[in-house]
Length: 323
Image (cartoon, rainbow, N blue to C red; front, side, top):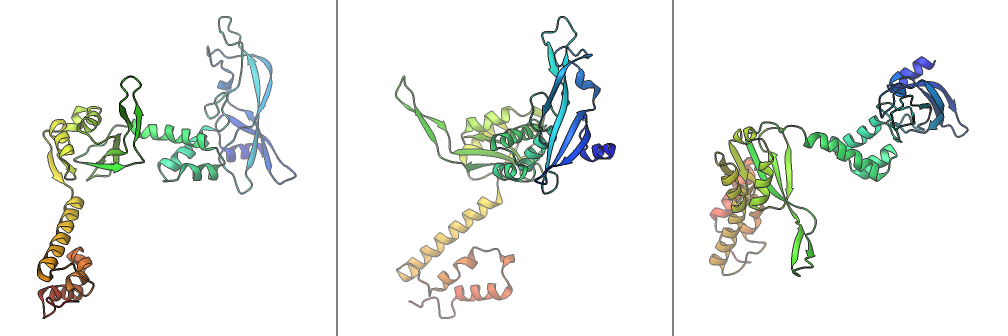
């Protein structure tokens, strides 16, 4: 039974000694150390041979079933036999449960991956895994560090755009009395606009210096592989690209092109209505009725919708009708 239960528990370095059911229905699992490396001194690495005493800890692991499990790790405290070692005694530890750890490393990793990979919030992950908010946030920082420190994927088309986040923060310089911006509400994001790299980086601010500072952290070979840079119609980003990526071709992404075209179309519609009717448009005007269809793609309109809109704009005796 113990061997099968240990296999089911599946935590390297620990073995299940016994399992008991408490009065409230909770199952308590008693664990013992099964890794010989646990008696190596963490300071000098010498294997201890003399037991000083015992200790019992209550580590937490991934949820099991509806009622969950309680764990009791019965481990030993050893004397370090190395005369020159400053560590006189130590308790057993394994890679999954370092000294002083209250949760297993696989539980910590699962908490971080829920936020990084599964788009869960910190609060929701804490509730699901029965952990505190700071513990889950620290786990997410560790999981995110693995991604941020990974090499950047090869990017052919780099996308640069701004994102508004929160409010700006100002602080007064005690020496000069001037107010200094310490937190910018605008952030600049760098994405793989053509491939599957997703978000590559993000910096606070949207100035030329902010863009160049992020590009300076990337390898030179990676920057040379970029052939196109997609931006909005921002002169700031264009100047930064011309300086940091002079070999790349600057293009405007289709979203901002369509947005600008739709904005201009609405301006022309309003200006034409005012010139022909001497007033603003009203609900009975064909141009007003078709205003939403004018902003839709042709492929999103049925033939009947397109014909209705087109015929109304051409006239048929309706173009001059007033409210």
